[in-house]
Image (cartoon, rainbow, N blue to C red; front, side):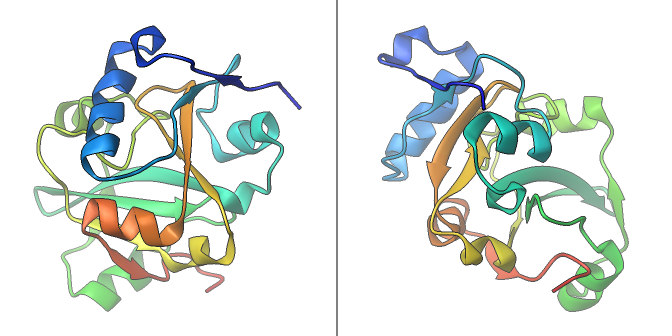
Length: 169
């Protein structure tokens, strides 16, 4: 397990993470953003670095429904079943956003997309499987930053909907 570095001061965070930290504070989130010594770009990387189950990693995925971006916060234990999600929500088919689209709509790079801190709020779905974990970890705006939170806090801070998003739900 890699050792985590708790950031003692927001001033030491990367610029993107500073912006996310401001949004977290405004949303009443108390979890501190931590910069990890290695990449947490994938759920497996983050779980290994944090010493937790991959299911406790809230992976942020940006999809397009038509031309509209949506954010899906999924448990790292499975993939998003886009067909089932479209059926549950009555949306147009979902396509995965390209890296440049993700950066444009979130201001953040793939592998580091936080649940909030984007230029505009995105419609968000929070994987109900994340409720199986007392503490979950979400990206803090860069591929090396994370913060602790909960399923319920993710729903609250994003104004999102909790739904099953994986094929194993």
